[in-house]
Length: 449
Image 1 (spheres, rainbow, N blue to C red):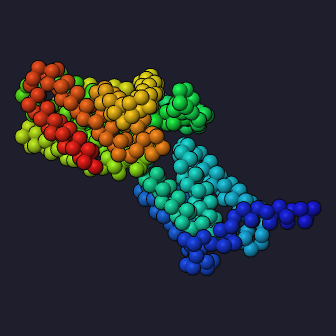
Image 2: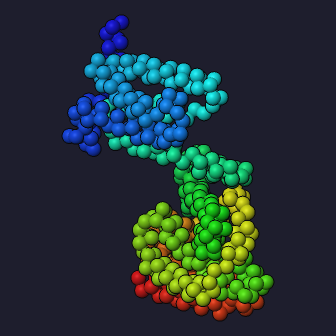
Image 3: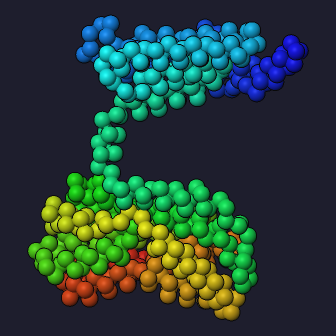
């Protein structure tokens, strides 16, 4: 019986290699037991300072745990871990943890009876401090200290976290859960192999791109809501460009018919949103295939510089107009994440992948450029992702970069036309020339590259 227990203990110890041989990050300085105990003590002090500061106004003796208590808990965790190592008895550390847990729970119950406070934060922080102190003694100093810093930040941000939760709507919570559902739950179970004509339809890859677009849109929604009404039109337009610069162009063009006095400001907003499309393209291509983003770098940066420069001039001339930004954000921030548009995007992406492969087989590179220009009129993300996916094995990197640039050019011209037509010419002179110049510059650089 004793031999079996010792064998189990030895196997358990072997699962903690850092207990016998410190990692390279902790080699040298943290090989000495005193340094390991010092790290455990520092972890307790770090968390204890935050907990003590929170309750600094309470009288001495009424606080359940303060700086000294948390420091001692961290040191106790380190000491118990060292004893467990020397005795080769992990069970000793487990019993020590149970003892600390019993003491902290008893203190929490007594405090509840005295103050009626049901909060478990200090109790959880105490248990975490013991565990992190033990981790430090086992040689896992860097992960333990990193976790202590993160825990301290979380503890100190309590008011902001509660305020954020108080302003969180049911729709926003459901949107975050939907994003997790389609990414964490649904994506891993999809087959990762080709189907359909020529085997170009890979369900896993297509849905992964759908998840990527949904995540970018959700981030854009958060930025619009958080920064739009407080920071003005600049942040509203840039954040909206992460979601749909075409939608913002249409909305601003409609506003210009009612608010002619703010045409310069509205034109700046359109240009900012259109300019944001370019770094978004780089981001998408870098995630799918970084080689494509390097080939696109100069054309995309040049187009972004032209459009952002024109927007800066318009902002300098138009000044600030808080009311317009608030009106835009209120009209634009409607749904943080809707799965139906994501499904539609997946279907569009599948169609473009099939069309690009078919035209490539029938017409060669000219077919790729044709489908790029046509699809770019309505949506630049789908063709960007589909061509990036085909880079290397099926298409040359220069062909992919040129096709994506053509899609951006077509999208620019389409948005310029929307602004001019919907605004009844009011924004034509302000929006069309920069987008046209950017398109010409981007096309020339793509062809030259």
